[in-house]
Length: 511
Image: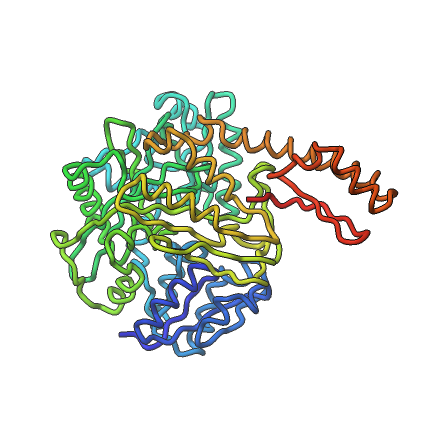
């Protein structure tokens, strides 16, 4: 077993990995950029090393610098977490070149499975259904012919992409080349790879993924499905397990398909096989060759620590589980908490945390890298916490999640908690009637935007009232407020406080 592991990541996932290492008696090394010098993951690790300036390309994406730090620190292995270099086959290969174990799939398996065009090819060759689309990167001279043959609408995807980056729906041929140019540019910027392929856009699919574990001795198992259909701009926001569309027979059938795909890719370690379900058929979508953001919900219903198993597999150990002894207990759900303003078109909301009170009690797990004083920077993804709830039924989990989100208080930044509550309160969601178009179909973003605009109008009016009242005496202000009831009715969206002759309008929603 390893004695020292460097975690090549930051925030909640770095802390998550380090906690399992701590339980296993493994020394941890953190890396940090300028902005993360005092971050919680930096302080939690046994050792912490400066990796570079705040921008990702100069720090958490600087593969050569991370290898250099790892060698100087004398680590046995590197855990990449998710994002950054987690699915970079060149980085995985550099680790091997420098006699450092990469805790993930081999570089060549990652290249085969992680490249979406390559994975489509070998899966299709084996007769596993894939969404109709191109099997090569498209060029301008053949894009229209391919899209027309498939039938509009189509979706453009980056061969090297993830997290919804570079993906775009094209409704009509007149927009194809413009969207193709945008997708290529975005893909090149994000992944260093401009290759784009085209798929048929399924109108109302469910996004279903299977968690797999594969050791180096040929043993592969799946740990059930996760439903990830609640998405915005192709980015997952709420995940749950199991899915309401699965019975045991379907789980066994699609689970075996996922295991077979992993076997075909000669895949090892933890990974996810993703499918789109249109109500009739499960189409292979992609392989995520890493630990997923939503892995905690699988851990909760299986009582299996995925990070611990990643480490054991990387060290050469044999899986201690077989498929027949995997047991699923209850239901679990995760809400991703991002620093963004849902009332203002999800505008990013960086800042310093001035208040942080996470929820608790039975069936609630919080994965977060925050404390009061933590800074949410502009340089990285806005995800800063995950609220996970467990219960004996889906209904229990939804109620528990609503309770947990209402208990969670974060100040200093805006969060997307109001968005999550809107979804959880929707009757269709509560019945499990969901798909990847759910948010737009239900007009949730539009409703939040309208509420935000109403709030801004009310705040402008309140500011005018306060400005006019400042000239009055304290007694006059008190009488004015008693008469103007509308000012007091602005809650729960806003309130204002008076302290002597200092007046402050708060933009923070009340709960």
